[in-house]
Length: 174
Ligand SMILES: Cc1cc2nc3c(=O)[nH]c(=O)nc-3n(C[C@H](O)[C@H](O)[C@H](O)COP(=O)(O)O)c2cc1C
Image 1 (spheres, rainbow, N blue to C red):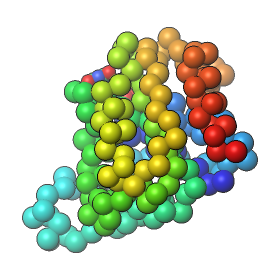
Image 2 (image 1 turned 180 degrees about the vertical axis):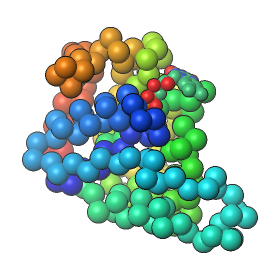
Image 3 (image 1 turned 135 degrees about the horizontal axis):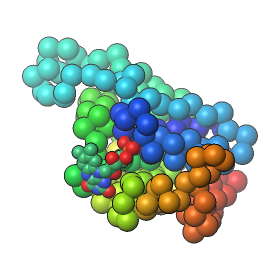
């Protein structure tokens, strides 16, 4: 199974990137490809720029990566209650290739933040809009207070409730 792991943040020490790598590592027999959004930086989307530039190669590459995967595991960082600008920009450009950005793929949606909110606001936005963008959502799970619940030494989440929800969702793949 080809798994695409996306931390929806361009932070070099992204906790969402860390979380998504952990989650993808739990999928048995998976070939995991981790996306670094910094490799998909493009001008801020505008319809005028689109007329000038067409569809940037990075957007096409991002669309292809999704198309070549069996499962997408994505973890959303929350900036001011919503997507990070970095993710939203990649998403906007990619949606111009095909509004069904997720191309009917199975998607596990996660989100985490250092605070008690666990980036639930952005996760809810992503979940609610998923059908419009062709995502077959298997489950959505937020992890609050990341630094209290992640052990960097072992590279694992140490919150039983989160781990149970995640393994239950992953088991639906079998
Ligand atoms: C501009 C900005 C806005 C933020 N807004 C929120 C927010 O609305 N909710 C939240 O839980 N955390 C918020 N945070 C804190 C982020 O959750 C925190 O920086 C987290 O590490 C981002 O995830 P990442 O490490 O994967 O990039 C914000 C951080 C920044 C820099």
